Structure formats: structure tokens, C-alpha cells
Image (cartoon, rainbow, N blue to C red; front, side):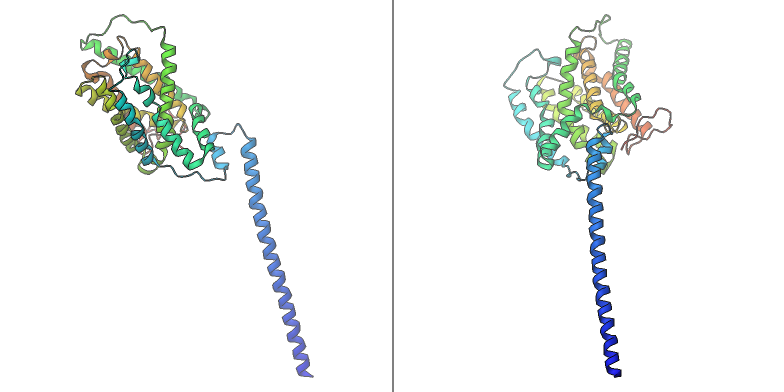
Length: 338
């Protein structure tokens, strides 16, 4: 009798435990389903928000994206840039056509777009056709620039430096023209230089800069990328007969320009359009300088190019070496780097 009662109790406990276990498993399964549903729901809502909020800033859209971007390869980029430019360097010694701005070799027209081509090749490998579209759209990514104050240095910094160059050259007695008139073809020249700048900066700034400066900082990136960029120009500089002194000053100025580009880029929400615009204004201003680029580069370009280097040094001191985006005195302040 007692054995029967004990057996009955054990049976009931086992049944109860089994039922409870099944309920727990079902509950856990249900919770997992709910969690999966919530994750999927959030993902769908995020994608819906990403698609519907077309006016959102690009960085917000990137945060809503559920796909992690593929890692970029700056090393492969620079190897490609140099490799793809070799044919243009070879052809420049065989093809001689004059009439281009600043007496540049005609092969420089094609070489200008090599950084863009290299970036497109790598982006296609990493992200597919969608990545190519995103990179090309950065030509006019001005919506990233939330503080319009930064248009002031973009439009006026280099013209101011060129004006100071002219005044300094007059003061030290260099033979610069005393009368000057803006050429009628300046707008066309600017458009040409804008397209050429896009061919370079979509590669350098749109693809290579971010992973480098995230690793070694903004100033070091300016020095490294600026040096590689300057060396890339050497064959063209030698081809048009520049002196060793002018090449040396040109090297320093090219590094200085790259530091200024990164400074603007990091303070404008990483806006490539601003850099392209700044680049084009700089090239246009040097070409329409009184007497042309040849006059600007009198005395091996020491006057104008030293001012570029000084400007880069001032920017570095005022905005810091790590990001070039932390202003020391909190007076002139645009958007800090993302």
C-alpha cells in the first residue's frame, strides 16, 4: 500500500517535472522567436527609415545601415595608382602637344583620373556596384557640411595666400607684372580644374584618407599621403623641365596642400566636395596669377610655396595634430571630425 502510494507520488512528480520542462522549452523557444522577430523588425524599421528619410545627413544614414562596410586597402590603392600611371609617364616622353594650362604634358590629362580609377577598382571588389555609386556621389556631398562657415577658407584662403605672394614678390623686387586682368576663360579653366580635382580627390580623400588617419592621425596622414602624392608628380615636373630647386619647393608645397585638404575634410563632416572645390580654386588661382604660373614660380616658387607650408603649419598648431579638427581657442569653429 505504502509502496503503491510512493510510486504514485513519484509518477506525479515526474509527470509534473516533464510538463514543466516542456513548458520551459516552449517558453524559451517562444522567447527566441520573439527576440528574432524583434531583431528582424528593428532591422526592417531601420531599413525603412533609411529609405524614407532621404533628407537625413549621410553619417546618420550610414549609422542606420545594417551592413558593415568592407575594409579599405590604402596600400593596394597607392600601388594601383603608381602602376596605372606608368604608361602615362612613358607616353609623356613620346607625345608632346602644347597649349595645355601651365604647360602640362598632354598625358597628365589621363593620369589625373588614375586615383579615381584605382579607387573604383578597389571599391567594386569590396562593395560591388553600389559602392561605386556611393563613391561617385561624393563629388557633390556638400550636405555633409553642416557649418557653412567653412566655405570661407574654401573660397578665400588660397586667393589670400596668392595675393600675399604677389605683394611679397613685388617687395623683394621680382619681375612680376604691375597690371593684371582676369582672363575671360577663367570660368572654363575653373570647370576643367574642378573635373581634374575630382579625378584625384575621389581617390585620395574619398577612398584612402579615412583608414590611414584613423590609424596614424591626421597630420601624419598628411605627411605620408602628401609625400606619395608629390612623388607621383615628379615625372611630370621633370618632363616640363622644372629645376631641382622648384621640384623641392613643389614637394614641400604639395605636402602642405594635403595637410590643408585634410584639415578642411575633417572639419566639414568629411566632405569631399569641399576639398575638390578648394583644390580647383588653388589650381585656377595659380594659373591666372599675374604673369601665369611661370611668374608664380619665380625664384623656384620659394615665395608662394613657402606661404602654403606656413599656412599648413599654422593650421596644425591651431587645430591639433591628431585630428586637425580641435580648435585651440574655440572662436572659429565648424563641425568637428566624425
